[in-house]
Image (cartoon, rainbow, N blue to C red; front, side, top):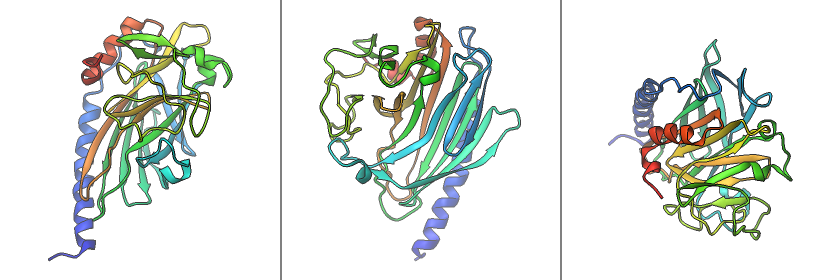
Length: 292
């Protein structure tokens, strides 16, 4: 019988080969955006921040804390420090044209998450492959890419909420929605929990009684001429936060020993044409488009 160390090495070797294939397939499916986007984008990653730039992009840039945290379940009414799993993300490679980046996150419990991030016309494509090469189940249930929208909206923490939207009853709804939750372990902010996620497993900020229709959350630019929106599949929650930020948080759902999962996401930066955005979103996330 092989030792745990040998088994872990075998699992890791299989994961590396499998993740390269999965990420390559994700990249192969990435296609240029339609005419309603804001044009070619570039990306850079440094000090745990992904910076997105474009000549037509509202504001100087969009900065994303990538990644802010990996989280355990049971988080809704618990100290945040007990929810997060210590991790380190490092750069693996970056293309000279600033259109593709590869990262790897190493979690304290042994989980490895490989990221391929590709900039296109009016969108950024995210492909994650998370794997547990250990003999112990991982409690990594979701991750937090924190999108800072201060430059895009031209607003601060006190007034950017009115630029933001989620989907309720199949329609876009500007924030603050009614009712608006105000009580939680930490305030302010607003969490929208999808039906597939247990009530005890979301951000410890005020949780709305409203259930989002899909996984898309976004905001309008300062001049209302552009939209920034984001979605992941699968997703854990939608969150309007406390750093002039928006979240659609990717869901891992925990990892059994030897298990690997693929998670994918999009950041859209488009002209303020909601029907056109929805066409792209439904193409990219048909599972979400079926939800109401």
